[in-house]
Image 1 (tube, rainbow, N blue to C red):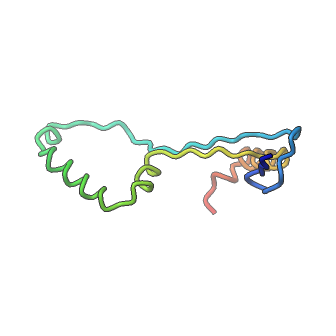
Image 2: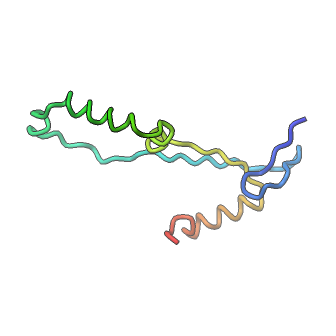
Image 3: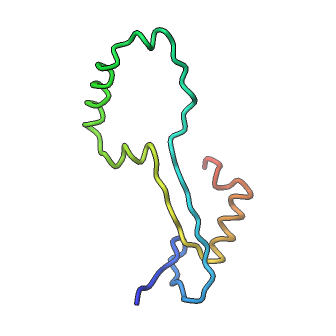
Length: 96
């Protein structure tokens, strides 16, 4: 039999216990690009080669995480309430 634990508090999840699933997605968000005449005149092949060479030196997992990552967390009722209250009060969003 498998045992599961809540992600925030580490308590054991009992079979009939209420639990909550929280999904967090982090992804790159960029402003729409404006293409100018100067952009069209650039050597795009050289720029792509430069970018690929730069990326080859980096950890592929970090590169992917900069673009997109997703977390799924199981919360007990108490942790769900704590997270909810902090979100409602803006605590999770403020820089500490």
